[in-house]
Image (cartoon, rainbow, N blue to C red; front, top):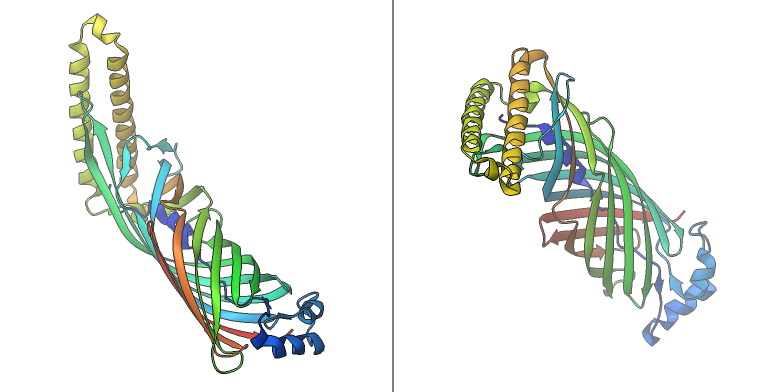
Length: 373
């Protein structure tokens, strides 16, 4: 088996975070007395957020109540895959967990999104996510079988570097609070990514706590903000899909791979049978030997079944298809993030953020425009 696009599901890991760092800030300090007094006396001119006027009159500086941002997000993440089942031409699916071993599997993705948002409450922002996704998936794995001594060896390998496009949409909310320029925010969003090769949109959930500080510049309403935080990704565990056989393997050398694999299976089965028949009746009752024998037979049978099924599918390769199901998760759910934002005024903001540590690396760039509503 070669060049496998079976793992198209890795698009799920494209989840992203598009939180723009503005917040309701409690004005404190003698140097800010004039601003604090003006907030208390001026009439709040907008319908949102709810209770905006009451909060402003208590000395809180509110951002404009609506906004839209354009975001570019890039990330690379390692994956863990298990409970893999594969079938051909809508036949029985075979469980391959015991014989398939994945090497380094990861996905690179770039996402361009538009995110409209409103401040529903003075300390609660809600937003939508609409975007286009471009990905490159990299999967490397092999089929392994045991011999009579329980030594496992690889009889076939497969790998892929496939590119996919998808659309994504989602909803999010961000509770946040600020006092004297220091702030704390909890960003949460849910997204669904529509991938043609999957039977339903892929679901993901993002959680991102952040702590930060805003530093005023000389011009009014101009500032720089810096923050640190975490980034947690949860993706739906079960994935089912259907692909043409030509997207599953490299047809140029697939037949030779199958024949070589079946020959190796036959050789190892003969070694296992010879070892077992050479044991005494007492040794054949030893639980260790029984477990070794059963494991070897089960693995060899599983490998033989999948290669035999593939051999049959190759006879009608142009019309054959592959059905699969599996469970997957990010290798690390959490990683560390740092970021900064330059606010030109209360209308225009530019933001950059990067994530690292663990097995995920990510970069985000964003431009935001805000207005009263």
